[in-house]
Each structure stands twice: as C-alpha cells, then as structure tokens.
Length: 292
Image 1: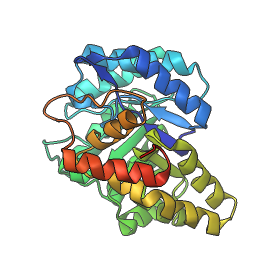
Image 2: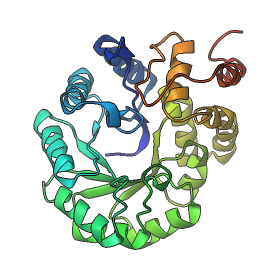
Image 3: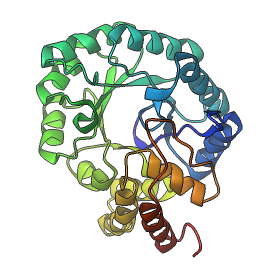
Image 4: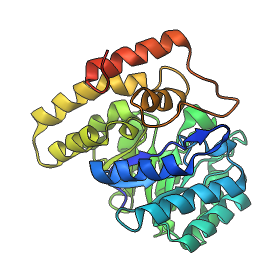
C-alpha cells in the first residue's frame, strides 16, 4: 500500500494560521501529477509546531480532499508514547490508511525503549510505518530492533529509512525479508535504495516534482536502468537544494517561487537567507521549474 512516490506534504500557512484553501490545492496538485500517497503532518509538515487541534485538522482536511483516491499515511509521531497513540487512534477514526511514527526525539530511548514505544502504538491495531531519522531525533533504530518489531506485529507494515546509509538499509531489508516495505527517507539516495530492495520514497523533493520522482521509480521497476539513472542525476541538484537550509524552509520557498504557496514557516524556523534563496532560484531555473 505504501510504496512508490509518497509525498511528505508541507503545511501551508497564511498570517500564522493554516491556509486550508492552499492545503486543498496542494492535494489536487498531487492527484493531477500522479503521486502515489500523501503524508500530512510529518516532520516536513512542521508537526512539531502544530497544536493538537491543528494537527488533527490538517489530517482531516487531507483525508477528505483525497477522498480515497490515494492512501493517506498520517503523521502520528511524538516523543510521548501516549500522545502518539492518541494521534494514531484519531487517524484511524477519520479514515486515514495508516500512520507514520518517527522515533521519539530528544528522549534518546534505548533500543528496548524503542521496541516498547512501537509495541504500544502497534497494539492500537492500525497500520504503522516506522520512521528512522537519527539526524533529526538523536537516536538510531537498529536493524535488529526493526526486525523484531516486524516479526512481532503484522500491522507494522513499513519503515521510512532516512539514514542514507545503504549498509543499514540493506541489513533492515535482509533481516525483515518481506514482512515490511522499506522506503527511502533521503531523496538523494532513492535510486540506490531501490537497487538494494527498497520500494519507493517518502519525499520532500516530490512536493515540487512528484512526476519526475515517479518516473524514476517506474523506470527502475520496468528495468530501464538508463532512464532511471538519467532521472536520478537530473533530480540530484534539486534534492540537494531542498536541504540547503533546514527542511522544510527550502521546499516551501521553492513552492513560493513557483507561485503555489506562501514560504511562511513557524518559529523557531525562519525564512531562507537571501544568498541561499538565490542559489535555490538558480536550481529551479536550471531545472525548468521557473523562468529567470
């Protein structure tokens, strides 16, 4: 269910509040471009600065706007297990298809702590995709922990692996076999991840070019490695530009330069530096997304 091009959807703001009209427009943009699934309220959606009410509202809007056209993987991560469980229950109630749960940040739990955190979440009985991004959370969920969870809970159906470490990714796939689907959480290494058994990506860059990311994955799946490699290298400068500053600052600025949403982010994030904005603009021009 959760494979191919899955977009880590940004949350558009206007004057400090959620821009619900633009959020619905983003959904339609992705339906037109062939996006395979959407993640509202992931970390790219600035979930850390959304109130509980706002978090639920964003998920509800996206579920209603999509209207079962593609799967919805609702962000339900927290560094408080009880809070994460509450978000999982809500996603289940309103008709999402699964949840994406990042490892608890700041707490730095042990591998045992991570196991029991996800065990408690899995016991809600709803499809769960694990999310490992040690660069943002301060903790790395090891392949053995992922494998134990995959073996013990059938509704743990996938993992977003954002280490960019092909050795770790390979060990996760080898240990879990076909029990879960692994997707990349690192846009620059999608193609190498596919090569070792990954099934897609939960992508920041696909907020702006879902069609090319999808074409690359489709080319790989069809055995057209030359086309997949061509698209990988076409996408690479754009993928790198999305992280020229802290995500989602650059991708929101890119969407703004394309005339799609406001670049507004919430504190403690701030607007992109002018020098980096110009670098980003040049990448978008070179890609053909905007004019000079």
